[in-house]
Image (cartoon, rainbow, N blue to C red; front, top):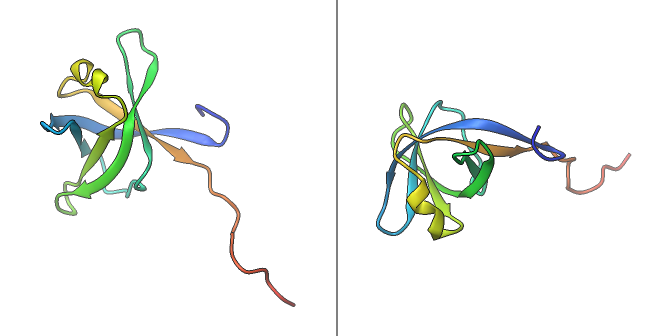
Length: 102
C-alpha cells in the first residue's frame, strides 16, 4: 500500500510520447483501468513520482493502451520510451445511493 486506502498496481510500459505531451502506455493486461487513475513512475533514485492521470483507453481489446495526461510537462524529458509505470487503485467505497427501506 502506498497511501492509506490506495494500492499501486503495474500498468505497463511507455510506448510513445505525443507532441501534445500525452504519454501512451502499452497496458500489461486486459484489466480495465478506471479513467482518472493517477499514474506513477520511478525516478533515478527509486522514488515514485506522479506522472499524470489516465484520460483514455485506446486500441483493441487484445492490446489496449492507456493515454496519460501529464500533470507537469517539465517531467517529460525524464520519461523514456520503455519506462515501466504503475497506477493507483483506490479502495472500494461504500454504496452511495438511496437508503434502503424496510
